[in-house]
Length: 252
Image (tube, rainbow, N blue to C red; front, side, top):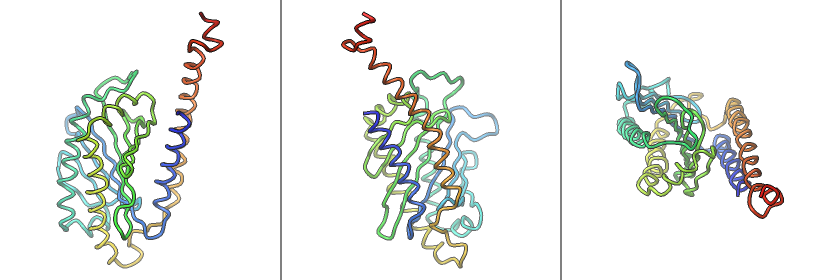
């Protein structure tokens, strides 16, 4: 079971990376950070948006405005899709903040209020949305991956198994995650692409991945590898202690 989960996770990571290298394929991603109790003068919710790995917007709960970032953002900040995006980000911030107080990873040793970091991405081709996912981190520790196209959950951090089961059983929450990534994200990307594709070269968002994309994937795999080793060792220790095994019999 563990080997299957590991294989599934690595395949999904490679799938995400392949999005950026396919021709005529574009992606829209949002990096979100939520805290339950922010310090004075600091927002409790922040967002950075990028298209094909190129930043183009920022949002925070204090200003409640989507701010354009660079030429790509300036090109579309007067569109209807930009206005709709402001409402969408406001709602997702409120939704994530509502579930934050009940997030308690197993064996949680973190001091202070919990924090949630999330990344949602959608992939779009001419025929529409062809891929979407959410990645969740608790207190800056990668925990869960949710492929919203096939509704498959992958546990990255074993301590987040309980949270995964709770969320998986919450149909309204699951449907919200699916709608936001497969529906809203893909719709916004399609609207923005109509404007960006009219831009003169070389400022049109390129679907080719920069070198930093490969390095980011390598860094994520390097981070996950110790987690995999740790999980394997824990499972081996549990197996050896089960009644009926040689070591379990000797202990008795």
